[in-house]
Image (cartoon, rainbow, N blue to C red; front, side):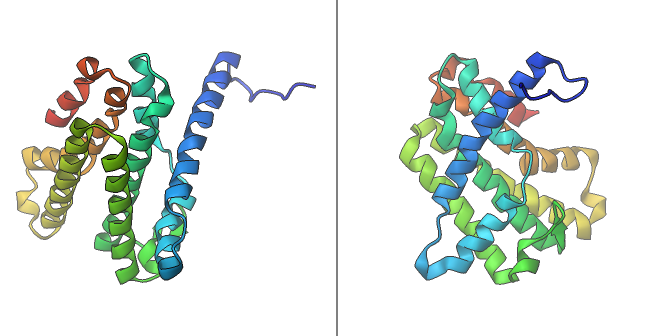
Length: 213
């Protein structure tokens, strides 16, 4: 007996969804592999994995894998970038929750609530460090430069957002859009480095347009 497909979902859409889930399962495996606990810092690694275990859409790593395929390459070539991008994204969520004093994310306690503030800071730092380690060992110089500059811009965007809360008069439309691009948009753009990993650098310039808009 064949499993029944969800109501109103075309068979082709179901196949596509299953293919995407299969791709993302490899990213999940990599996330857990690179965050295997260290005996000297077990709680730190548990805290770093906490938001990953809480789930998420994984849109950024999916973009990395699909952009690699879009230039005619095996999506697995982009797994290091996809994993690193999700680690950076998760770190930004941990630090953002800490700054905003949020107590829940995805219906789960935030890291600084589940553990403590110092551990939350260090877990975010660990995720970024792991991401840069992956990028430095598995990607060309161009990707390394893009990802590192993206991290700088994300920090600037987070700071701008923080300033707007105490000085709302600074949150002009122009400044707000600049903040949103730095805090959120640049990482989406960097995810398209999967195309570079697939050897399609000439066709991977679109992410630079995203970073400038």
